[in-house]
Image (cartoon, rainbow, N blue to C red; front, top):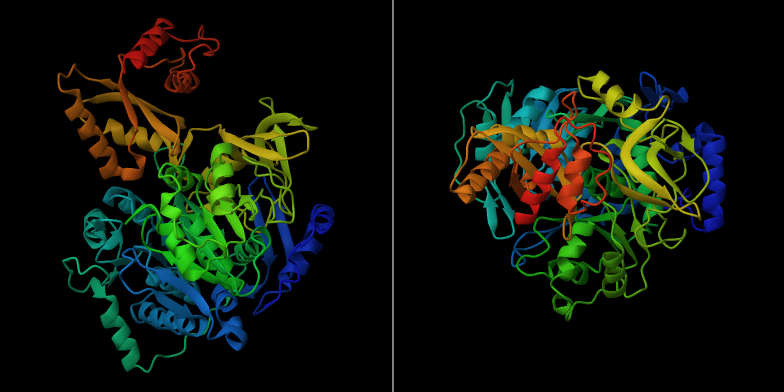
Length: 639
């Protein structure tokens, strides 16, 4: 499969970028011609950012699985679509060809149809990183059901919130999941989540770990039993359902600045085009290469760069069930060596963690197959960038530092591997179709280079968020109301003297911990559920492994002699309500919080204290009780 829209020189990038800005509709019409459509579009784009309303390829009918599977069968039927590496290196890996994946997706699509799943129904998927997770996702898309994949580390309460918000009628899970030395009892977590009010009709359970489970009559169904029924029916063909271009493909929940998680909505046609276009161009994918993205499919990175981007491009994508440090810190390098991986895409957190183990885990691992390295989830610091370049890429592999979000569907600002310039710790240049701008605190655009401000986007791209599920006003408020006619990313950004972009971190109340976005309000809500907590405030601070750690200031209802036991109880509460990923790294018990006279917590001051930067607190005269700041500084020193 050739990619006529793949940019291969810096001159071509500049020309394509210019065209995408001057005549975006014609630019995207030409890109879209390279996909399989059941009906072509009437208009390429209709939009306004006021409502907001964005419609790409309006009037078109398309199915993303036809573009990920069916159209490759003539040329790639027997080529590997998915290589699955299990958690335990002693267990056999699996190679699933495009022909087999096409067959298995139809099989599970039949299971869904046999059990009443219809176009537009929401299906929550809570599974370990097994091939059946990709199969279930694609099967939903095949029949027009809306999938909502939930990360396997979330708690029962967090899952219940998501199931209820989506009004999901169906859940797909496993008995358990393997993650390093741990076994996670996924089905029992789902059982707990479903104790609260919901409309779930069926839970499909894949056997993975042989963890004992309770099966509820008429509700719970074994995956294997349902597949047998399909086989007895003769494995009927399931044609790809015609989806309107703006029909919802999936909902993916992300943390917001309020306690309630928000369901980011991505629709079919635009997301498909954007995931494919960015995959082919950012990574400079060549037919036959092996692409290894280490993300979990519970996050947007897994959606776009394990499933939809690679498969729509006819690529071979590696799915890994385990963690990078088990059974030892050489696991990623083993996988690269074993499958002769060409493209390796991971998070700066993982790189910093692996750096701490030194070079020994790389002994006897042949990494010479690597051609492109990538990072995702947060800005990569220079030290980690140079280590990655020298020891993993042998100074021979371009590193693509991709900036994007759940809401953007795919990479937005990134160098194109080996084609456009790279610069350590910089995302560098916008992709074609992306019009970034920097805005000051007064809402005015900051022109020129060597400047910094809040990062906004002026014009829609095909992968842009369409709504937040069942709450369009929240979408408008969060992304489109801060600055008129602009999409506000929530990130601060620097544009250097050469026009290169460097993301400087969140400017709203959302933390970026190990590449996962976690709302401060969500963590505060969880902490406040502990009966001894009166109030809390959570901020981020620099963390040498995670990038950003979580620092919690907590007001208690009384003095406690045994604070260590109390800390464990609070951490357990956060784990129960959200999941272990949201546990604060540091807790400080304080007599009060710095607030303005109107009652607003001054997080800027709390951040500075957490960072130890107490010489630059700024103006504290507007505080209700300025003397409290000195008390907090002293407590932090003794902490």
